Image (cartoon, rainbow, N blue to C red):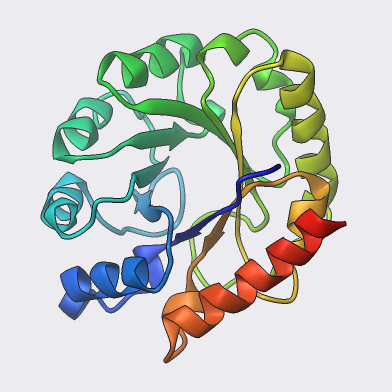
Length: 224
């Protein structure tokens, strides 16, 4: 039976009280904290760095999933690992040597993965599946929160699921962008097992109500 994970993105949290926000969302049922790192270079926005990761690490026991939307990536990987990241993903276009970067993440004690933009092909996975712990499919173009889900991402999720199944490896399949109660089931049907949601959770008054409603949709999918 598939294990589904909900990973709220702190990009949509109230940064004035971030420790309280992550504690509350975990108490409300979150499985992972998703951490969006943007550099105003690879993507057109500037967000947060290792010091913020280090600051929230004592507040939660769940894994911290760091999504690096930066170029180049290698310099930041040891810093985030030291700051408490458990999972680090990056975009293949942002690394000159994908295999080396994946190995660097693993050498620093974290799970490693690749992130695919809506227009990025999955062929970057062809020769590195042995170093992949997680595949992240972007269902929006990266750079900003609050965007609408791109339906074509479902086709790519399904293709990534086939690659994972064919590999026989235990690889998480994450989707990020516009995930909410009314489309999380479709993403699960396509093959995703880990769901990043920002404004759909942190933009609401009752985090638990949203997460519970998402789990109802996932349970219905699992029962089919």
